[in-house]
Image (cartoon, rainbow, N blue to C red; front, side, top):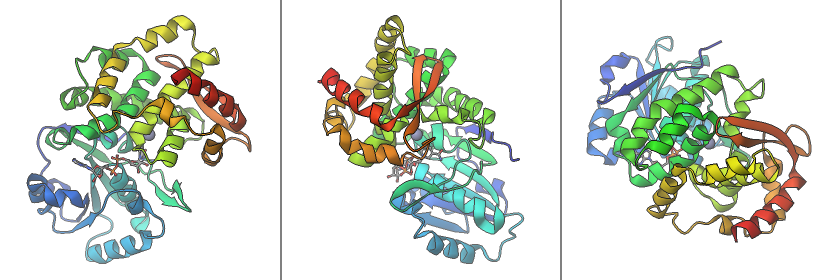
Length: 355
Ligand SMILES: NC(=O)c1ccc[n+]([C@@H]2O[C@H](COP(=O)([O-])OP(=O)(O)OC[C@H]3O[C@@H](n4cnc5c(N)ncnc54)[C@H](O)[C@@H]3O)[C@@H](O)[C@H]2O)c1
Ligand SMILES: [Zn+2]
């Protein structure tokens, strides 16, 4: 089985394209055609494929068109030596990873994540994905990158907004892991690009710790990474929120429910609610496009209207039960089975709680 830990390269300069050899295809987010510094790096790759990021890129329907073009562009290269370098955020990574995994039964993959979300999360752990039949990630493979480059000038040049969009995944990992990551998240002065860069190695390390115990999601352990995602996916689908923003709200929902259900005691709950990272997350939110988004607004629908999303949740273990990740305290998550119908009174309870 392939190793599920990719070689990590934290670099303060762009890697030389020559490093990847002669048989290389660059798949990249076409927004970089408008960023002069990145564009001049991109142009050093003789064979490149520019894509428009987003969920449409991951569509199963358009995949054959992309794949045919890619095969045509690379037909003169050695499939045995071919490397696919993918530069972009999570959508480009999910698409490019899938291409690498099926291109003549698999070629070497190198990720250069360009958003905080992809640098912290999606470039690691080997999940590739396409969307089908109106639902996300219905088709995919486990195909870890051989190498991941974390390029400081690329990540630091992102708009602040992308930093806020990654906070859901960052806080998720810190709550799942506890320990040094949780302490450091509380200790940093503010959540800006500089501190996200400092936290990055710890976040990635914690993700690999979980992935390595259950690389292909066969033992249920990898399901821990779904913390905050059950309701997060509902908010993402229903309101069209960015993934990380939806996950942040999903985490709040999960923590409230953890206390309500007695997984978390009152002392730990109060301690967690007063933890310093919340104030920093609130400040980052106030400075973002999401400053007016409230849990109350997210939960203001009739609870019943969320049921169809919960039922779609692909992690369902039986016709009625979902595996929900609760938290005892930082570093101590608990997976428990809950029925879709159990969400309804909890959503109603949290409506009055947040109101
Ligand atoms: N495979 C996994 O394990 C995994 C995990 C989490 C999320 N995902 C997937 O990741 C996707 C979300 O990730 P994302 O938010 O990175 O998506 P994205 O690729 O859509 O990027 C978000 C936006 O940022 C722009 N962008 C990218 N890099 C930039 C840069 N350096 N500067 C300025 N703008 C930049 C993109 O053009 C896009 O508009 C979803 O499709 C989700 O399903 C996958
Ligand atoms: Zn996620």
